[in-house]
Length: 141
Ligand code: ZNH
Image (cartoon, rainbow, N blue to C red):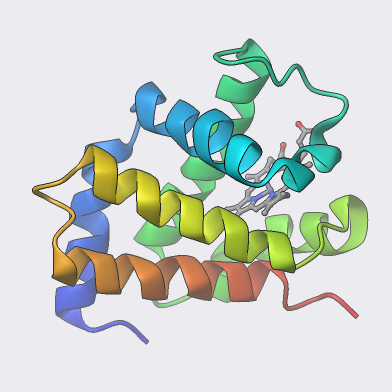
């Protein structure tokens, strides 16, 4: 469960990044795919060139899902049920990749929002992103 202070920190960072295409692109092309190229294997069918429409669309969906999650911090299992099924049964993304993406999201937030992403926000987002990843990988068997 999230404290009131954690919730406030999560939502205030979300307000900063929602719709921010630059953060979306930094997260995916520059961090996830360049730092951890093995993650690209899940996206063979997409155009992974820097700034591509596919990357914007996909990044927008992932961050959009995080935005939805941020609004349902007391009930993440239900809020994420559909994409949890999708990742477990259809996409079959190895759970280790969630660690990599979580790490990249934190790095991008820290570098792109040096003032707002303070230690409180860092701790709250770490907990948030790992809780979300936990829900998304909970159905793997
Ligand atoms: Zn994921 C998809 C979210 C992680 C891979 N995703 C997706 C989507 C979403 C998401 C929302 C869309 C769906 C629809 O369309 O309906 N993810 C997410 C989140 C996370 C994730 C929130 C965390 C946090 N993913 C992930 C990872 C990976 C992935 C880690 C690997 C690396 N996804 C994926 C894929 C897909 C997705 C492959 C599909 C794409 C296309 O378009 O096809």
